[in-house]
Image 1 (cartoon, rainbow, N blue to C red):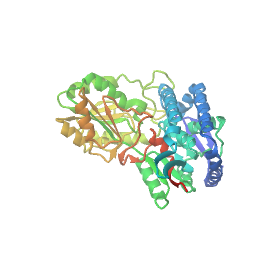
Image 2 (cartoon, one colour; image 1 turned 135 degrees about the vertical axis):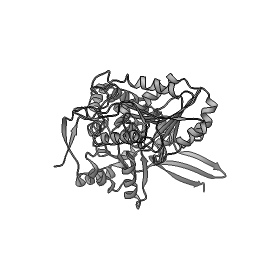
Image 3 (cartoon, rainbow, N blue to C red; image 1 turned 45 degrees about the vertical axis):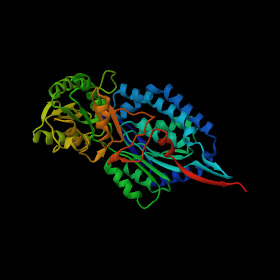
Image 4 (cartoon, rainbow, N blue to C red; image 1 turned 90 degrees about the horizontal axis):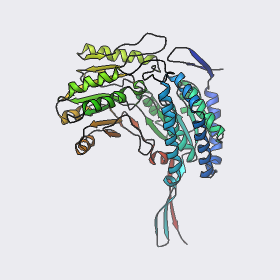
Length: 457
């Protein structure tokens, strides 16, 4: 029997050894899901919605226990775990409210005895390889609309958030979703590979660019729907007319929330030279107030780094920046163990020769670069292979719109950052991925349009 060891990244302690899947069990679950999907699709939408409503109620009633499980396996501060679960409720409400109208059959022409209609039918069997940093958000962005639209789901949570994945599956099963229709597969990369070998109609992945590229290559000869939500190197520009203290407080949170382990964390800050020094002073002041401590303490802001290998990535970015002339203002090193800890770190005098301004940090590390004009800021913001989010801080809405229209990013922010809404699509340019989740488009993505040409005899 294969097992998967789950460790607490804050302490290094073994939490539990889960029974893991292997190629044979993955194939068995895929076959069962394929067989069960047509019957699930035939269940009236109102009944599928009732299942998700019961799932939502269970999340509410068990929220504190679910938050603690997530905190212990990922190192996320407990307050942020509760925030994620509370934020999930609004997403569930959106999917429940919008599924019927966004997938209703549309009559687009009806004239002279000819009727044309567009019907939305389920993809069929969906494979979802999910992420650990926001396991409830990322998992349910796929699972819930996929189930509502009549698909069966093979769900592989990240090996760093498998306990949460098991809980998601348990609550859905208790809510009435058949086990074959919503099958959780547990394991590491070999289990993900086995999942890709199955006869599926869509693959939805959230994670690194490197893994996304491997999935794209593996699926390249198979004409199934492929959606990849990958990384970002998200920039923000602070204009000279912005309030330095207000922008700094917002961006410090945007850079360090969830210990910087968010694909939409602010990872590059460009500040107009006229307020650069004041902004840097305010941001460092704010970052120094962020408490590093036990993720289970209510007042902790900076938790553990979930994946131990990421510590070496952060150390390498710090060494590279220092070696190329950046000024370290605070932090800069790992903290003593046990567990995976890194100080919240701020650099000024950075440039684009440095790794911390080019490659994802995915940790509490931020670089601040001085610019002399809007044009220079836009040029630097677009100097990246990513294109997930970007922001501008200025009281002038017209100026912000002009600037953000020039930036290659799937989501743009004016005077805010690190924000996701269920009403808006989540997508990216370049190496930030393919396809989208959320919004009504993120419901329709789990369907295929069927065109009806109907002529009366």
